[in-house]
Amino acid sequence: MSFLSNWACRRFARKSIDEARSGEFKLTTVPSGKIPGLESFYVWTPSMGFYVVFVWVCALLIDSGRLRDVCFYMSAVAAVNIGLFYLVKCGRHGAEVRGGLTRAFLAAERVRRLAERAPNTHQDQRQPDSKDSNEPVPVGVGGTAP
Image 1 (cartoon, rainbow, N blue to C red):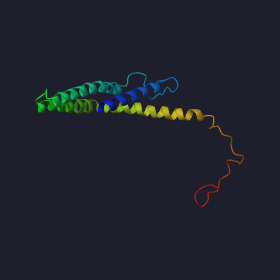
Image 2: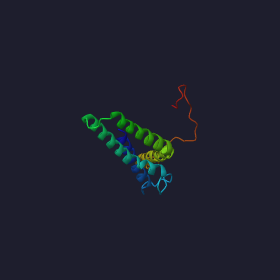
Image 3: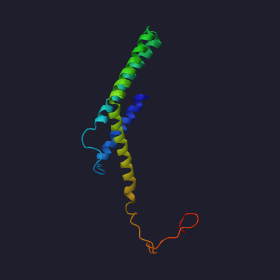
């Protein structure tokens, strides 16, 4: 499940950054070079893929009876899980990955808002009401203008 989550986040982040850098939007909050946090995150998916394959091979070989020392292999899986994923990836690179992903997700949100607003730009130029807009509007008891 982590592999699919990493893959989906990686794909969404790349798409968001590419779209934010496109000629249509050209957001100034997204730098033109590499984003360090995202570069660190992009290597998580392949390493998670290798880990998933390793765990599945161990599980299938243990289940078929070819690997006898279950405790040893499951200790190796736990060591990789704790050492690689918790200490190295989350502990050492967690802050910069969080920053890169945040930048990508915020860029996606800005692009979505700009895209939603773009077709309505001509409707925002409404004609003023026939009533003089400088006159005060009395507020009723319910707090709304009549």
